[in-house]
Image (cartoon, rainbow, N blue to C red; front, side, top):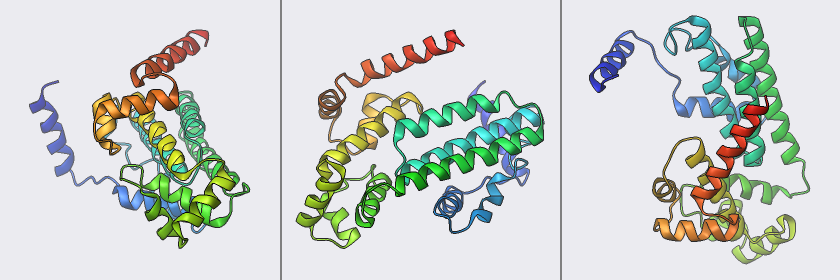
Length: 246
């Protein structure tokens, strides 16, 4: 498809009066649900009709695609609330595959509720770990600021603790220096950006605030054990093997 054809399709959608949910509104509704403040706020994004006329040639396929988009939003929100990256992504892979197996509107609605509830349970489990409230807030702050410098002093100020005391408390509870934890989370985010969003090594390193890709690659190899490209290649190979087994 040419760019001009794509832009004609875009213009047609925009002139139709159709509107997507804003990223801020969607994230706000997800935060409210996951934090247990207002589950009913999800009504807007749980409506499977929302994208039913624009995401595919057939209504059922469009509803399936809309649910896949929702799974992505829920997965990333759960990660921001402390759920471990690989667990959250693996679960999203499971539910995306389950979407393909549903043949009725009722099945898709049931799967949607199950998926939302599952992620909320994971967040609850994470919050019930032995971490104190300041450390839970610190981890949440880190997850929300991975695309920024994310200085330890900023984290400490955000949760209202002296920087030195915060570092000692974090190391005691998490068994890692906060600076090392930030690096770990940035590298996990880089894996997602390269493997799922298709970013290059340079693009991922720039997005996460590294001064240059060489520094990013050195840090990646030091902590992950392979270069970014080698790691992603192994992950892709493992996925292909799993698919063949199925």
